[in-house]
Length: 103
Image 1: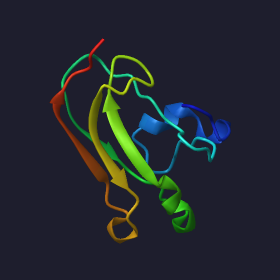
Image 2 (image 1 turned 90 degrees about the vertical axis):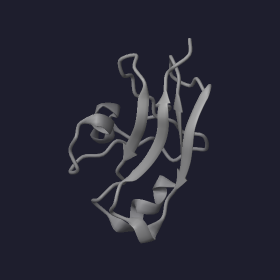
Image 3 (image 1 turned 45 degrees about the horizontal axis):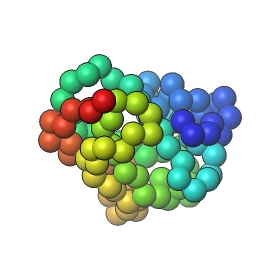
């Protein structure tokens, strides 16, 4: 993560498969979160917005998903989503169509 709000919202919580936890960067321009996965084609990314406080859900803002071989690499853009109150709490699904990272 580019920054960490505090230890209650640590990066490990981004992918812990629990709706009751969340990860969060500090509120900064161009904040990012990077997730390392085994080298394999990525079909899609599923993003669940926070569910603890509806008044903060819009903090999701705009999210772009890239597949790359290291944090910050922006070679393969899968897609971009924007917060949409009408679709909450449904997940945001970003199609990557089997893209693989480039080194």
